[in-house]
Length: 246
Image 1 (cartoon, helix red, strand yellow):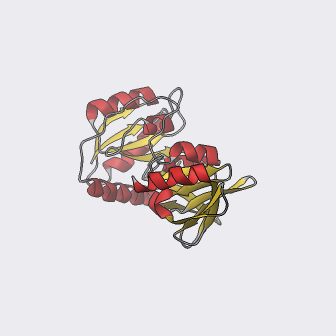
Image 2: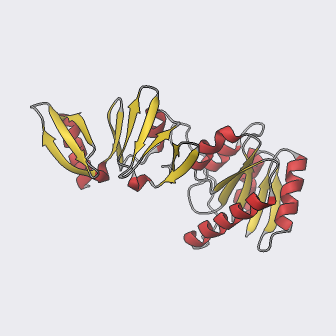
Image 3: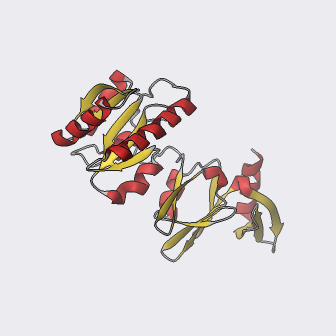
């Protein structure tokens, strides 16, 4: 795998270089010290894999990752701070390594990258494309927490997102998880062709709707695949019905 190292700290680059050079199948094709340089080198060198620091002066790692439109390169974030783990997975990172990077975790992350690249069929590197701040590519995985564990959920399996005070629950056919995002933030990340905000407290997956029933002349009841129910206006129910048919 052609590999690019991105980190503003020389010692961190040295450690990654040593780990990569000691791992069969990895080839270092370049290094970058900031986000702007990283975007340029991804375009020029077309790496398969990027070890990307999150916290850098100027353009940070999350901004660089959001500029990639699917396919390769596969991204593994490397950072000294674990509070950004959810954000890292939301932009499609295959793994997240904490500094100082341990070889055991490094090897596991590289194996995840190999699996991802095989699934992609070793497609050529994607071109970084600047995008407006108000536009986000649809999230490929949705992080959800149960206890101290973080699960990466396929958007297709999610029934709904439901706010309860300051908490946002992710509802799947068999479990509930907690999201660290607000409904507003989720609404901006989710695929608008699949997900629809039907209430200030609820976003539903229109693919999971099984029945739409009238409650009154102005209100309708949505029944989802797992039995979850949500009430919407007649206008909204009609729009959702048309969206589900398209």
